[in-house]
Every structure is written in structure tokens, then in C-alpha cells.
Length: 71
Image 1 (cartoon, rainbow, N blue to C red):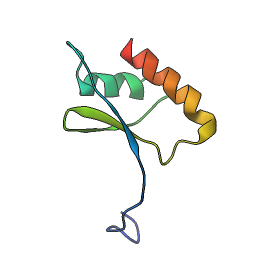
Image 2 (image 1 turned 180 degrees about the horizontal axis):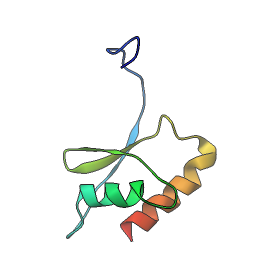
Image 3 (image 1 turned 90 degrees about the horizontal axis):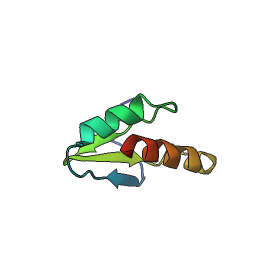
């Protein structure tokens, strides 16, 4: 969107898979509704967390939120 809607921004993402009864949408919801809200996107039945907007000082908080969502 914005002034350059076709411009691509370099980034990388962490793909979070799932096992058993938990699906990507359930993990995404738990992350989004967690103590520290984390917003991701679902592609090919995997939750992707784009890291371009995560500052290094926030890495441990993100990791903690992911562990809690997967528990």
C-alpha cells in the first residue's frame, strides 16, 4: 500500500509449523491474544512471523510469546 504499492521490501520470516490437533490458525490466534500480542500471517498452512519489524531487543519477548502459544 501507500505511495509505492508494488515495491518489495527485503525481509525474512520464521515459519512455525504445527503437530497434532493444533493448526496454524489456532497458534496465530493464541499469539495475537497473548500478553504480548504478536501478529503473523498464514501461508501454506504455516504461521509466518516476519522479522523486519522486530528489533533485536525484542527477540527474547518474541521467543517467550511463541513458546507460550505452543504450550
